[in-house]
Image (cartoon, rainbow, N blue to C red; front, side, top):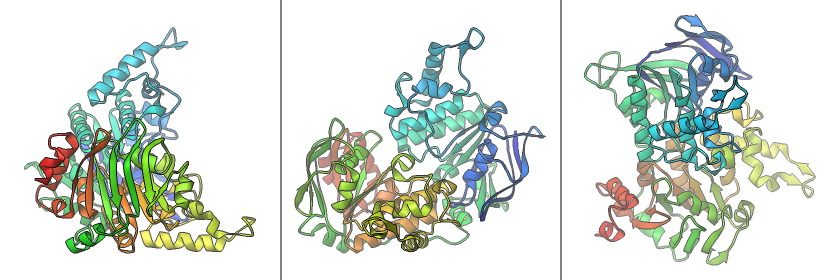
Length: 523
């Protein structure tokens, strides 16, 4: 149905794709995996008309396509859900879904708003998304916005669907629903191109898997007659095999070792680094009592809509709050993120594009921006560029950020590398408390291990960490304690011993869904 033939893409100083040839078949889910910067998103952008290939061609039915713009791809029956949310916030959900293929009457003179509304409701219903088509896109949560992006793709009735990290912003239940929908689209005879760092999803639903490394296709796998993914020799393929193919080396446990002695020591620090007392985000969460000690990593789990992100935003002044925040035993109130930063609290948002980084600025500028005062002289009249370059180089090396030209706009980096920059820029402020929401969203398995080790080392150095994540294995693997939220308040807490007991993930889900109470969990 679609073929990339010897596609090469070159940017100044880097070859993002090197003679990539792949075909994508009707009635098939074809997964593309690889480390951050391997070229996955670049390939998808070429296929969707977002960027031109330097060399090579894209063919449909054996005929080369002229893909100079995404509208060319749409006319060829190709639609893409991008890694970053690209909705127009001032338009309604229905208008966003219909954008580019509007329903019109009287020869195109009038847009048929009712028909667009009905079509949006139909597609959202098929996705199982409870979203009002008439509401503005600006009012959507990150997860809701992702479902609208997917609805746009489906409503176009394209026969080739490209999904770049579609489950990255979704909770477990929503992700399962989307994966089931992808299987249905395959059964409808569409070609589904699927980019994901969640290797369990790839193993579960992909018919074929192509591995990119440094812009080249290095290995492929296919689902055999026994229903399992296999290599060319017919051997069964699991997540470990895929991970090794991605990084080109053996990977041990991606989580740093955590001992109960260390956990007990951390949780018994006399004075908490940060303490929430009867705290909440106005209208979204309430009655939260939580203390995090220096050197402790406390995970926050919960389903989408449980109030995790809203609570974090209220702590740093992004939302109206209720209750009390104490830092170092002193009650504080922040009017904005900068005030929180000055008090030693850094917040890494889940909304990388909206609140995490500035994609039009360079990698260097993004890393040093929150701590700009440290590199200015004479009351800000002169900027020490050499110091900024050195600071950026330090974090690029520490996080293994694939960034051939740090002076180029951050938009030239892959989503995973942008995520590393989002974390680095706040760590450069040298906080005493780090609040990080979805720390490894869009990050490959090798880079995840690096980030987990960095968080563990920061905690060992005395940093207090609050980590919000939709990935239970991640929270279980790195947290000293875990708090579960449900309907805007705490549903329970798991100690280190409980986290490392058999069935911890099931217990967390029972608390998050209201099946079990905190009392049940403790017993």
